[in-house]
Length: 234
Length: 222
Image (cartoon, rainbow over all chains, first blue to last red; front, side, top):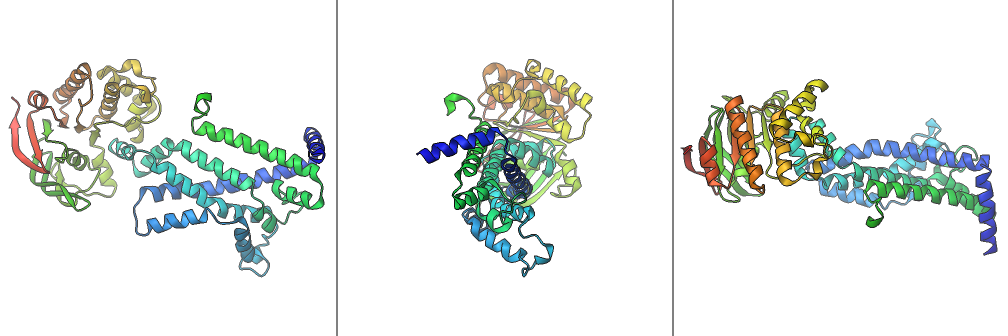
């Protein structure tokens, strides 16, 4: 118990002192997670809309595959991407291994199915009559799509936030593809794993507190998007 | 002739919901479309609004066959508007809803504002200009949906049960608007209705559907 309390105390001091190493780690984490969420959203939201609003052969199979990808372990993604970007891999010449770009690639693969799947679910919940109303009022297919996305914005926003939460808390991809290089690819989770290995809990606890604060802020945002900010709805 | 259909058939999940051998609808008239629930009224309105293509058969609009693709189709679709039985209002203010059709047509902001005010006044909803569209009552929502449709000055206004689930005062207002725009602007109106007295009073012609087929030739206004 003393160990935890001492670590917590020291961690608070570290946070208050704005320790440069701590800030750098948090900065790297936020940067790679934001970039991968942005890329995954740019791909996943239109894909989700298209899948939800079109009927084609194999749609059911595609949905099953998407749902399966949601359970893909981060180490499997790490291994897969590693085989492509390692020196002997197909993309080895690009020198991507142990860079922030490598982490982004892995994280995009991790959350793109999540954004797509949650977008499908959000868009499918929108009454079909929004589509016909927009069309009968003279909207083009693109304008109609924009109407639906606007109506489903809370669900889509929640999908983006959930995806960001997923990548900022993952450790496997960051460790395998980023390499945990200090000042470059060290993220909050990989740093916590390293500090634990070293038996140094102070920085790990400080990072844990920061991660929990971000998670809490994300959940607040999530509730806001779902219109549950009122106390009586909680 | 405004619409001319031959062998128009609509099939949903192997069930024939509409099967019209011949259908002719004149322009600048009010048509009442009557029939029991499931008779095919809404399906026919969706076909006439060009929202869905028929399973088989041909549909002509103003003497030209309808082609359901290409840039010409958008132009054609923009000449007709359908007001749903339970109209969907987009999230946001009333004025945003009413200006939607104008905005997608690229009309300038000032003109849009002017038109929105004009049509809201026409349906007696000017006080609700900035109101949240999702907080309106059923009758108010229908009037806003009507204003939204009228803002784009369609050649044909299709209404699915325009007075269903609406109080008597709002029914009167909606019917008066329909009569007025037909007389003043020559808008062709086709409305599905359950109320026979309404169709007799307002419509120049009545089409009755029974199990997806026309059961009676167009009758005159009484």
